[in-house]
Image 1 (cartoon, rainbow over the protein chains, first blue to last red):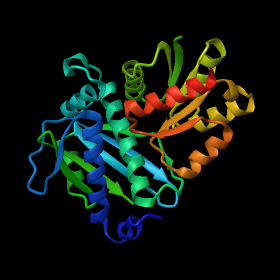
Image 2 (tube, one colour):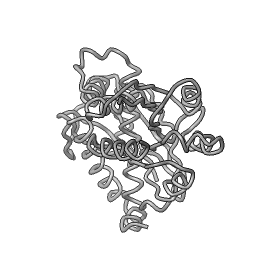
Image 3 (cartoon, chains in turn cyan, green):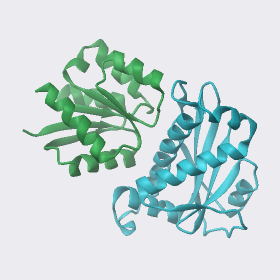
Image 4 (tube, each protein chain N blue to C red):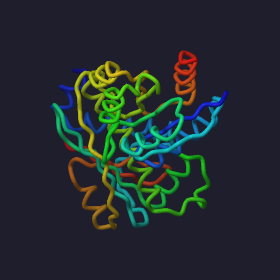
Length: 160
Length: 127
């Protein structure tokens, strides 16, 4: 097992920090989007939001989640595919891009946190559209933190 | 000589990104076939000449592991090279799939230069 495993079990903050680093790296590499940690009071972006989740089962079970505003997810897919955001008009495509991003982040997180000798089963990611109230409720949970992506708060959650 | 590829991934984003990467890689591309799961991929393989399959693992209907097992059972994996491209980084899983005959296993995200070198090495060996 990796050096992170013990720390992960002892301190949720460590695991969220690991996840934050991975998410920042993947966003930068795949979508040329820059992310930074934000610990202050957040202003809720314009709704609606897309909440993507992926469950993993194995020696450790849990799930990861990401919440992007719809507008930012459109920018995400445009950057991932090298298209103009105006050329993307499908809600389904925006959700699909977020699911793929989450899939990549989850794989990297599990390998970083637990090493690559353990076998995890990653479920197919799911998505749901949520509003401002659900966004605020999610932010208030212990397993959720925020990252500023292109100056807009993105929420991510980790439940182990 | 141009090469036909089959990309198998349930994510449209992933299929488009990989197709785009192949296009800009400089590989002599013929036709790029797309499938959303292993079952669709096996149907495409029945009716078309494919030089190389690139597949994800975790997909609905039929995942990549089941598809590779089927191709190993019917011997197809010996004539059509398969490269797994997945976010699943388990070495144990990679070793199992290599034993079944896949040619390589790349973890997402995959850089274009990595795909190019892997694909070229496999296609060169197939000549």
